Image (cartoon, rainbow, N blue to C red; front, side, top):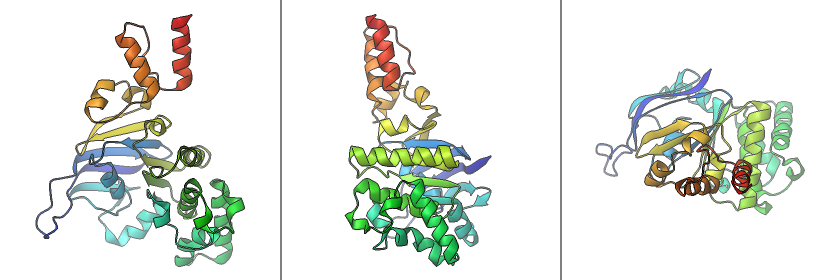
Length: 281
């Protein structure tokens, strides 16, 4: 079952003077995302990936085309709450999403605004903090947490709403390697253990390799849409589009150019090490 369907979407931001929209940022984008998938969306700055993300929970609506969330058209303003209950959004800077002075109060904030009963709020907050590994910080002040911990609190606030899908717009861009690893572990667990659909906008190749599917955007269009091993086999094409590839993929690519017999679909460090060991053996 598709939770998200993007049909031939074109979008241009309005000009500053209120005139016709500027040149399109999205150009006839079509993509479907099934319930339970973990999809990474890659692209250089200006490729349209963040603009696409904002269409997935109706922050933006298409200039032309249609976005459906479990069959609901995002252009239907009367269904906005229904859409955002199904698709939660996490942004790059967690400080922009954290509004309370105590972690558990921040996770409860949206639920209180929706009038959820107190006992149900307590249960959901406890479960959400447990899901992201932040239960022991429930009574802490968010500003005392690390960047990775803050982002996990922001994610807890979203999953307490019980969405079917979480869209994350470069959530690790401001984090150090440890914080990035914490967030990625959390996302993989939510996807695997709870069946939450994850759409991760990122420019980190190592994060994309951990997804089940990679969508590459370039100049407002989809360049590739396939499993990571297939996408990253296109080394020259990705480089031409202003993107890097995982270091393991680059190493195998250079070895193949030098005449060594290596598969094109190697992306993990373990597979790369085994392949090189066989060559040396």
